[in-house]
Image 1 (cartoon, rainbow, N blue to C red):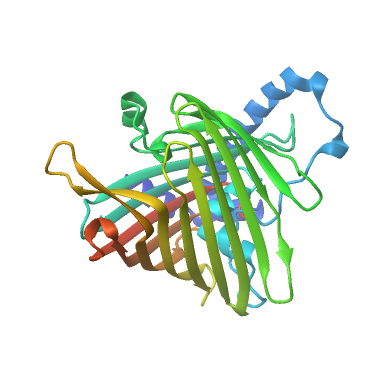
Image 2: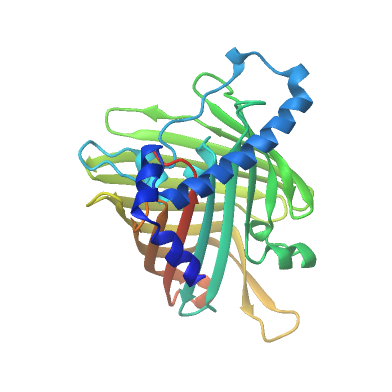
Length: 352
C-alpha cells in the first residue's frame, strides 16, 4: 500500500505536464479518471442500445451542474455554499452532484469511551449521458459490507447500495432525484426534493427525502440549510433536521451551527456545535443482565463540539482531514467522550 502511494504521489513531472494540458492534475489521475469514464461509457452504451426506441427528445434532457469536483475554494471573491460543499465532499454534495466520480475514503475513529474503528468507504456515481443525460449509476459501501451482507445486520447505513439515480426537475424551482436499487439484498426506492431561495443575507435550501425498503420499511427526513457569508473567506451555516422511521419509535431531530473558514487555497477549517435528540429515545442502562435494561427519554440525548481541518496535498485529488472533538451522550450519563477522527480521501473524476 505504501509503495502504491509513493508511486502515485511521485509521478514524473513530464507525464504530469502532459496530463495537466489535457485538464487533469497528473498522469496517474488522468489514467484513473479515464477508467471512470470508460466504465460509465460501457454501461451507458449498453443501456442506450436497450432503450433507444424509447429515448426522449433532447429538449427533455437536463444538463449536469457545473463546478462539482473542484478542490479549490474561492478566497478572493465571496465564498458560496457550493464551494464549501464541493471542497468538503459532504453528503449534501454527493447527493446533489451530477458529475461522474469515484471516491475512496479511509477513516480512523478514536473515542475515549468507545472502541476504535477503521473503515474503508467507497462511493461512486457514473453519469449515463448517452442513453439518458439525467440517469446515473451509483454504488456505495464500506469495508464491513461483506460481513453485513452475510449476517444480514440491521444497520442500514452499513449495507452496500447500488442502483440508478434519475434527475428530473419536479417544477422550475424544485429539483428532484429518484433512486431505485438494492441495499444488501433488499430492494429500495428513494425520492429527494430540494429547492434554493436566496435573500439579501441568506441562502435557504430545504431538502425532503423519502425512502421505502423491504428491509427497513418507510423512512423520511427533512433538512434545512441556511447559509450566509460573514466575510470573503468565511461561511456561516445553520442546519436543522428531523426524521422518522416506521420501525423506530419517536422522531429524530438535530440542530447544528457550522462555521467554515478558508484561510488559504486548498485548505478549509470547519467548527461545528450540534445537538441530537429523539422524542422517544430508547437506550441501554444496564447490559449486564438478561434481558438488558433499557430506558426511554424524550429530549436532547447528545451534544457535539468538533473542529475539522481539511487540506488537499501533493495532488489535487488527495485530501487529508483531521477532526478532534468531544460529545456528551446520555448513554454515558453525559460524561465527555473525547474523539479524534482522521480521514484520507482519494477522489477520481475530472477536477476543474
